[in-house]
Length: 466
Ligand code: BGP
Image (cartoon, rainbow, N blue to C red; front, side, top):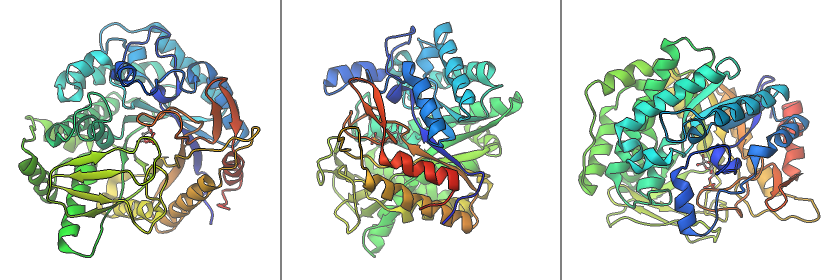
């Protein structure tokens, strides 16, 4: 199978997971700094020291045919307090980084929010507080003004559902609140309002380039051929996927979407506050998205579940330990006859194919899709600088085949970004869950191309999925 000639084969990073240097360059704090310190398992320093090592990583990109990169701009490097005074050192850093991408012929796709709200705003309730929306719009404007003539592709948010879920449902992201569906749903709506405002600003001000949003989209299937499981899978899909896709591309929440949301809120308590003007704003912005970014790692199989919420997050790679049951939604089944990673992520490329076709059918104004993250967390073996990561190659191959098939079937997919370019720090797993094409020795910060990097280079150069 082949990919189109102009297809981008990129690598993805995120500021907090790659840069390290959390206390350098007058960077302001993010909530993760204190949270991780208190947790005591691992820190975001040194991460991959991308703050200093980015020229090395971009040189590797050029050498290995990686012709696109996802980076994110740490909001708290630009505004250490989230708003107010701009930090020139932060502004300069991203000029240098973006210039280096361009010098190495690696197209930068720049995300404005990748899980790292500045601490001052986070302490004030993060996106549950509408003040954060205004500060985010201001931050976006500074980025467009500074980097607008160099950056062609902008992304407002990375993964609104996982951030809300981590913060308020699984409790694995600060402020570590568990099972609060009301807060999760409200913060998703508010982030969509922030997205819409930034998209509108971008288009109204005629900035050059394109803008979109990244959603993490897992397909949700009923575990058994039973009506109750079908309903559970549908409700889980509404909360994690449809609510956000409706807001993004329809600018309204369909009746069925609100049925699901209201049902979850009834069973868990709480309500959704939609302010005057919100729906008009979503409607207007829904016309302007230039692309959709899909992050896809796994799909889920859902069974009906009537009990209280109960989650155990497998953050160590001890296979078979995951539990995910949500009151008013359903239960994820992990013991399927489907391969899964040590972190219990089901490897199911069909789910990516189904999702792309669904976008084409249900949201025809999506324009184009980039697969902005996909990859396999794996405990790589390092033997004298050689890393034979065959399971990762197999994982990427199968997902690229799903992409090629979707393109054949009429979906407009223009690129794929492997998570991650080099090994980075993982939010709730630390440093042993590796994803990179390039192995990072976190002590010496030396990079080693894995077997997958040579394979990826071949695919990039020939567009043939071998
Ligand atoms: C996505 C995030 C990334 C990255 C990836 C892998 O949700 O956008 O930032 O972390 O997942 O997840 P993890 O590190 O939890 O394995």
